[in-house]
Length: 106
Image 1: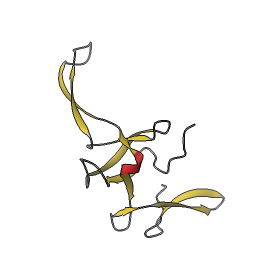
Image 2: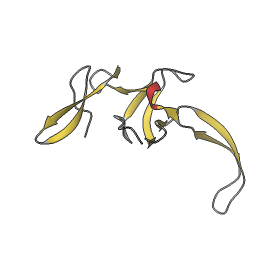
Image 3: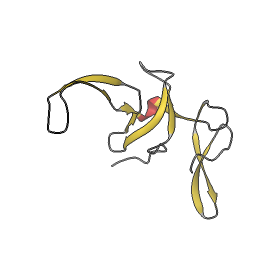
Image 4: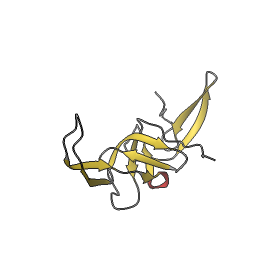
């Protein structure tokens, strides 16, 4: 069963562990069944691809998934890593930064 993740597509995150520690970017894709996220510009690998109609062949750089425990949200107030909590506002459950209390949801 897939766990509920506090990270969604489009969120700004920073890598807190691993080879790309300190890099930040926005989340391009979330896979809750495998507990992994794809972050723009992080965990980049080169793939040799064959030419297809509409796509040239050659060496392509591609972002690979990273485990969700190795990334943290960026606090909108001071751009530092933060945990995420929830707050109910007007009957809606919204995500808030635990560090500053700022809303993460748009």
